[in-house]
Image (cartoon, rainbow, N blue to C red; front, side, top):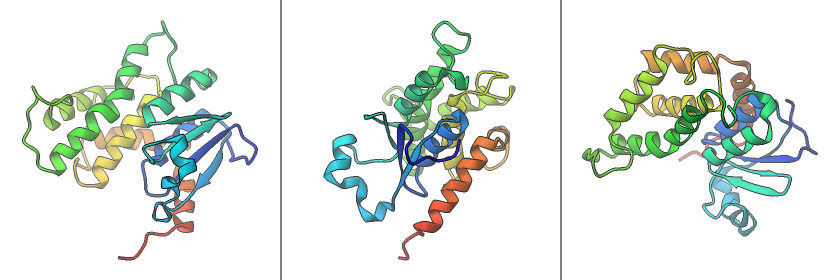
Length: 214
């Protein structure tokens, strides 16, 4: 849905960040929103008014009719429940609900820490770490996507946005291979019109706020 200055939802967005995941969710759900875009180097996300909404001072953040929602997993659940007609969030009692919830938390709670393990060369200790290990994470997510179109089988859901976004970032930073079943899955999901619209907006905002030269 086109951006709207009088929409109930405001998305606080910064180019070249994980905020594109929330932007993609809104586009997939066809929900009107107002984009509050800024350059992270400006420090806007550390101002007192922003910290009052999100004490972590991170993006993305949405404010929906006066209610602030931070953390991408929480944003996903919030939007899915507020906009059930999008069909992107299985309701309580619907098939796939448990897997939907599991994958939403898997993206931030397992994948991102596992990326840090690999990137920082931390010694794997699956019994000590809540995320298990990078190799275990990789095996689980590969098994989840290699034999079916989406995480819930034939049904695309908001969980696919989170997992595909996390995989895409892993490939961008060289943590994951750019070929194979994971890359094929990312290709399927990012071929959707919702992603294309979000990517075009992200590119536009990136041109407004170009990277700082070192």
